[in-house]
Length: 119
Length: 257
Image 1: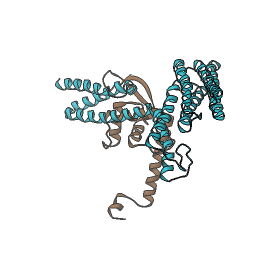
Image 2 (image 1 turned 90 degrees about the horizontal axis):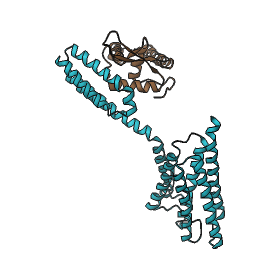
Image 3 (image 1 turned 120 degrees about the horizontal axis):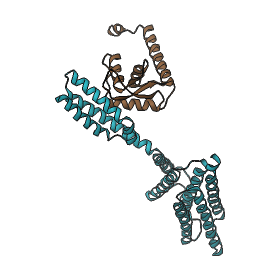
Image 4 (image 1 turned 135 degrees about the vertical axis):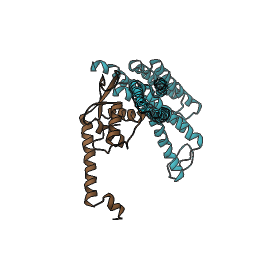
């Protein structure tokens, strides 16, 4: 995955970036955070998660941090992943795109009820 | 206790499954993936949820990713070779389209006004172009400078066109005498193989090839076989240019350091 300016992100990448936007996390931590933030709608297995992490690191969106123990878990040392400047930029660009879409929808009064009413 | 044993067993099986990933991927993510799998399994176990269903689902999900990663890895590893397959297809498409649309490109070999290639012509040219391309990729796999790559490219192109020209029209009017050019190609190929495409040694091999080509032309002239001197001059110049570039490539790394 090459970093491509403000190209749209896949749902998995967007959720991982969101999960890492507040603090660095290990793989399991990312999964938990993604599930929490999406109210359980987005669930990814280890295969999808690490495949996405690999491509994101290749694209410079995130980087591997230190290997350390998570005090809330067992004493196994885990690799933590951190958002990079490019990752933050990509996330901001994606969120701007979402805001623009929502603004257009609002302007056209395309709410859930409007669809139901056939407007 | 029983679930701890199950988690340990599934962890072991999951670690075995991860061995099917491409080696670099496995080395990078193998350990964190097993950790994450174990964390998820513990979470399931703590919530008294079905561990077997979770394991089966995760194994299937990871297996799908393993297939995907292996395909990506295979394409990335062989993309240089795949490029030459596409180039060969593109080259063969030209005469094919000319035949299909009856474009009047003169073809001295066929004795007709247009291109008229048989299956054997396509096969031979396909093998030649693909062979030259693969030879280039193989010979430049350790090349670190442009001169080295250019030297290999010129030598491979010269070899390709020498065979092509001989098969199409013949470099010498007398048919069996054309076989003398096999000697030139043999010097190039054997010399480059002995040199293992290392610049300094390959330079000597290319000078030897140029010399062999000159010898063939001299023999053809003495025997009155009517060689195509302009074409020969072009090929000899190509061998010499390749030799000079190989020589330059051999001194370039020391300049850098």
